[in-house]
Image (cartoon, rainbow, N blue to C red):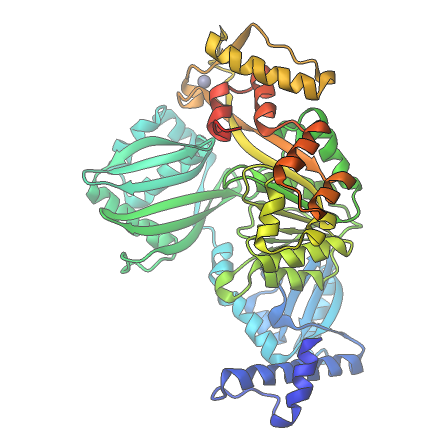
Length: 565
Ligand SMILES: [Zn+2]
């Protein structure tokens, strides 16, 4: 333990356990190490476990277990929970108030594991109660009732009517209308974009931006103040970017909204990200895993260790896929910890921890702390740097199942990407277990689709792909139907012709041959060819299969995969 050695080398320089404010940073951290070491010794004497609480990743949900005053008076903090098993940090287990709260928790049927923490560490972590994260979680500002939603639906058959309506109501009601409109159309983001003449409001629905309506500058001014107030941003600041968040409730579902604000030529531009943390997880089938790929996904549950990487650009549904994998591993016997930014779904029985870069809690450091908690399965939101990549592969090599995401265009590109990050091939080869590359394509709206015969130009393109698939996977026996669905547009799909999305995939399981090729530093093209010989269907081919099934269109597949592959 490096903290130990640091302490021993400098023990003589400091004999006070309480850090003084005037001390330099270096001495302060040495003092802290000394204090933590002393607490560890004391824990041993008392026969308790020790926790360096200031460094523990804490799921904000745990803060709900104790009220801020109770935690402060009892000098106590819950820091880890699986079901009713709860680990708490205390400064003095014999303190009367501490004892009282422990008894209270026992009455609530918690099975407690008591850990000793230093006073300074605990005081630091108690500050979490003052953080935005906790404050925002505590209060849900707005609740929309079913009646309001119905009212809204009656009035606004067409989204374009939102604009005039918003201009006649208060900014609070206006924002409410916009939020409800977004939820009703299944939008994932709301964009407010000021221009020279008007402010454009666009919704991202099924991955594509749609202009919904425009607002005049005066209405927008009031609306932006309301947004900044709700998202706890500085009202008087408009020349630098700001981030904030708020939440609302719709039909008993809590929706978290992440707000980003940037200054533009014509005023502040806001983007809302709507996070519905309680929407259900999809099955592999419903997500779009087909043929061999469905089997491969179902087999993941049998792995004992190794890294599963899901790759694709932002908004390609990587996290949803990993959540479904995580859900397969979720059982009372296994311990699962996630490090996320942001936490997008709540999973029962899983310890989910929110990254906070501003507090110095990043993926790399967070992962190191998490591994000390002895998990079976770990999910890290994203591998962005060599530090995270290295720790993740070490974890994968030492008996953990590690799930993460990476930004690459195809499955095979993941290998050179990791190597370029600085991860040596001798680690990539044994650590990596499965690579899932994916994109989301829009599904043709069932309500308004029109069946049409395939135009000559398209048919050629499709025939070529089908020939290739049949060569690689003769058992699939793919045939081209005479007619395919064509998107038309109706009220149900907001006149887009599409409704909902489905993923297209390519999956590589690393076997002996591919691992050997990585060790020999063979080109990714050679690795791709080897994978093709073993039956790899590319993302584009998987997309064409979904076109032939009538789920989506060739235009959609081309849009998300590009022309080059
Ligand atoms: Zn439709």
